[in-house]
Image 1 (cartoon, helix red, strand yellow):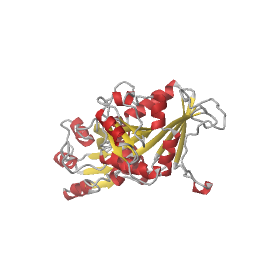
Image 2 (image 1 turned 60 degrees about the vertical axis):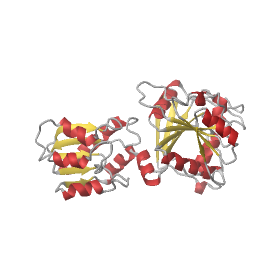
Image 3 (image 1 turned 90 degrees about the vertical axis):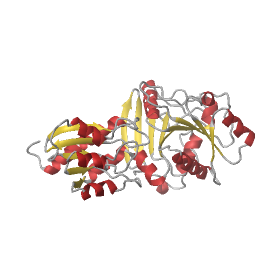
Image 4 (image 1 turned 120 degrees about the horizontal axis):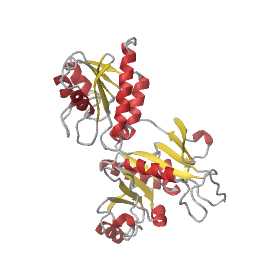
Length: 375
């Protein structure tokens, strides 16, 4: 790297910081994932990332990894603007100044009210040179923390819609059978996604048909996601596996104002939490529920269906990313279920167009990932 320009060195170290940040996925919610590198030109002196909620931030870990090295000529590279407020840990700006670092290169902004450029201002006031990344690098860093960014900017959680469908676009037979369309490898990957979010959401139809657990059943899970059931009339049985395990893994039942008080009281007495969503139609109630979930600290939701609920989320404009497993099977049948219902759009010109589209093989299935919006 000695023959590279400073700009090229900066970008290489920032991309390494972004790579390090990915180690924190599923371990830092609702806080962001962050990576940091301390280097003098091409020589790396220390690396670190935010390893767990409540633990030292990436900057502090990277500085500590430098040992007794003189950092007066070093540069700190960080994937997210350093914090300048007291939270579970001291401000990272204090650690940077105390370490004697005089130059900081930042990949992306922190949109929260406590930050939003304040950390950079503190560093500049202390005589630290602050450099911002180019747009391509900044976008790569922003994509690491879409849930954190949406929650900070809107108060609502980021929503990932996951489904499995056949080659002819069906998610269940005409009789409602859907287990299992996707293969074992795909289902295992979906459990990892559950472990990385704050909540998993389904509709009452899926809850009644499948009686699922909605837990993340993979090794090393640090915490289970909250289970959210959209159940306008509070029909979820208190004998269901979801409610039965509510003491160990929280269950949130989203009802409408039409739900009977006796049914609501039965669910709360059994250990479930009940949210009453307001609004004149299902998309409005979806938005109301997401606002309440966001207020409760839910920053990322994995939406697992079914088609009716997924359609309501789409109509509400609250699906941020789609991941579809395409299985090598055909169902046929005019009454077999589609992955999305709801109102939809009347014209192709009004269709939601994905910003990005990626495909990869997962076992015998094809995983199609599409990002609908970026925060």
